[in-house]
Image 1 (cartoon, helix red, strand yellow):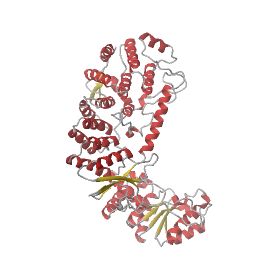
Image 2: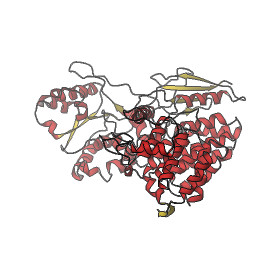
Image 3: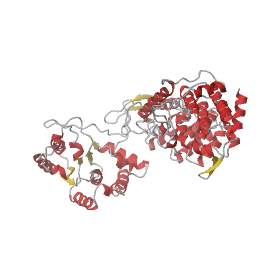
Length: 594
């Protein structure tokens, strides 16, 4: 059956026509199917080696519509919903976003749940029954004629087989039916068959499709290339994936998964030169390796001095990019250190005291406070990109900003800057806004701190929310600056805090993500996040008059991979629901016992 099937594929491939797309010669069906690209990369992103079943987290932010998922219509085109809009997708650059960023585990779990629901959607709906065995051409024809809407019959069957992990021979018999009936094979259907082969581990079938496409088309569509890379890297033909990778680079930046698949294959076949070269290229392109890529490097490379230095360099990369390895990678790192025969490393799982001391070895971790050089660098970048940025006057006016600068210049340096409206609105009882704000400011003033309260002019108008006597008392306890009601106060808060010096703190529940996004590069964004964690005060729980105001504990140490020579401390991600603005609480302590 396989020989006849391949011959038919070769025959129908001659019907594809060639077009020029973005300067590259491709077949017309490839051009039409390029809208499937995001979906293809999503499914080609599963781990190359079956032992590590990790979802490709670089694709999580893409919507289900971009992946080409059907919304509320069954796969055979039954009435009662809208059909899929395959034209909604287009070629997209790979995301460089790191798979280790805080919150990734939660997004991955949500994506996994959505994917499971989609699989049930294709295989468990009423009136959907996939064939249990390969069908003849006549049987396929009879089944198709029994359907109400036959327009996407073949695609519906192929998708059902894909999501249910159906028998490949059934898919082959379907393609044979299509070729027999039409004399050609839609590229979209062939692509789905390829996906079924790749995810099912049918690499010999993938080779047949690859050889046919190579003989028919001058170049391959990028999404198809990703699938071929994944499949080839599981076999002895893995080096051909390097050729495919070079072709992908002519069209777009390969994804970390593309690099990771080949790196894993290179390590498995003991070609460490190629593995490190691809890893370096990945880093140079501003991408971040996936967890399993680093895990393969730590587990697959024998301890040698040259490679030992390279692997330690991976830890420095995690530090420089504020990457938190997940527990399985942290375990691999621990095992690698303890396997170094000429050294006596011992690893233990631990946590850190509120004062920044490792509970295991007693080492004091790095301070969260910025150095003078780091602070000046951050201050300059924030002033240019946030305070003087192109959109700052959408949040205020030039006159108001100059008035505020003059105000700050003639007042003493502040110890604390309070986002007045943000703090007041922490109380759900909106009749107590001024009372809440006054309570917080009174607590800070009681500590002898010089306080600036930023607010808006409507807060000075007597109302149910803003009691005039409370606001008068507030202005006696702190310096106050009230902006126009249409202005945003965050830029003023950042200016006042950074202008006052590295000691100045600020009170707000705002995570400042919009302003962090305005910063020009990753290093500055990480500096901003470090400064924010060390300087931001958040009111703890409900504020009531007469009760002591408490603030959430701020960490005094930096949550980052760090070393003192004889020790390494690595924060690792052991949570499924931590948000991106949070940092891990668990650590791996590695000490060298001389």
